[in-house]
Amino acid sequence: MSAQFPVVRPRRLRRTPAMRRLVAETRLHPGDLVLPLFVKEGISEPQPISSMPGVVQHTRETLRKAVYDAAEAGVGGLILFGIPAVKDGRGSGADDPAGIVQKALRDLSSEVGDATVIIADLCLDEYTDHGHCGLLTSSGEVDNDATLERYASIAVAQAAAGADVVAPSGMMDGQVAAIRSALDQAGYSGVSIMAYAVKYASAFYGPFREAAECAPQFGDRSAYQQDPANAEEAMREVALDIEEGADMVIVKPALTYLDIVRRVRDTVHVPVAAYQVSGEYAMVEAAAAQGWIDRDRIIHETLTSARRAGADIVLTYWATEVARSLAR
Ligand code: PBG
Image (cartoon, rainbow, N blue to C red; front, side):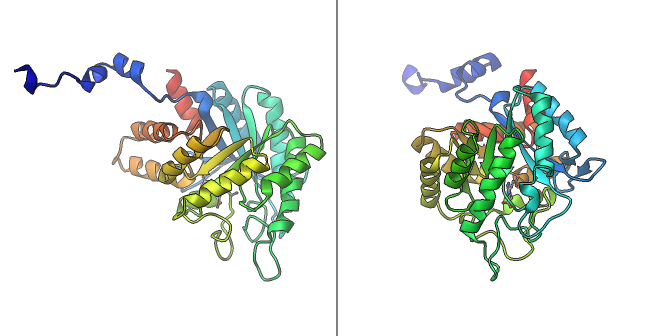
């Protein structure tokens, strides 16, 4: 009789909530989450983003409140995106000391001080009238090396305004080295770089382009963002960014690239972040609004998957809500 029944029973460790909690291999913690936030110049009320229900373009005032709430919930960091009132070919608003992100960064460093980490997304697409992440040549291609000079200047402006971390997301070759040397020369050797090392040319960024008003006016980003078909290329990008001085690396999007998160985690010795992007958020919110899925469980499951795949940090639009739910 005993032979026909199993002796080893993994189910013993799943019997009760307390037992499952004890043996859980992966945990979510507010301190591992980073909240992306949008701040727009020249608006007096927060503007809803139709494809991201629950997310808004903030005014400087409502941004302070959102940041206060996030810090109070224990959220580990914030990443800030600015939307200027006026755009031009070179994205002048991006490194203007009086530009929207620089103003907001100054507000935030006084508001939350050392309670959370203030990260500035560093790119040009929100600031250029053509919507590309860099300067264009006369034939309309993104000019890698001319763009590096712009990024260097933006990094210094963001550091001067109080960013703890800058996060270059434009996928120009050499951007981390250019930014590191500019920061060091300007006396900001303590400001770290969270590099979007792996950033795929993904359709999952669709809703973000509404939020940040940065859809390319012609063409797409495939000549600088990565081909979803490639994994080795991602490893090459990560190696280069670390060589150039990245202190942390981001893999983006999260859900469809968890294999890459795992490979990066197993290969490097810096913190690895996964960015759960706007399209991932929108899919869940849309299905939940229909009553088709259990919203809260899916949010926890997707975040847990990113952590299980090896992400030390997860960027998510649900950061404050999830942090609060974890505290309960
Ligand atoms: C570029 C940038 C993008 C996102 C973050 N930084 C958009 C893009 O590359 O088109 C997308 C984030 C998201 O979809 O949530 N500055």
